[in-house]
Length: 117
Image (cartoon, rainbow, N blue to C red; front, top):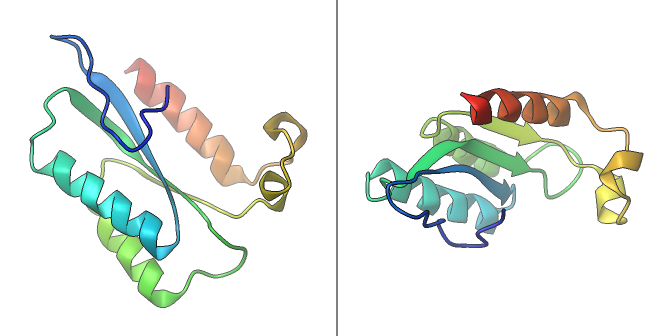
């Protein structure tokens, strides 16, 4: 389920397992940083943060300032998945028809283990 730009609010005494997802451009990383700061401050007791998945916003190497920011944010989350650019996604190809880089398989595998833990 997508909560959009909001934290989920489960019925008490429930706790939501959350995977934050962000694009790797400056606005996406700053939004992720703000969300991680809220979670780290302990003001979201109903949220069990599984980690952060960052989807590349462009092909190629990430600029150093963005790479540095991602490294900083990554230090504050339980798990970080850095997902590379997939041109087929931009073109609207269905995920089941795309040969995905290994990082996507790792995310799916890790999420399966974390969600069942």
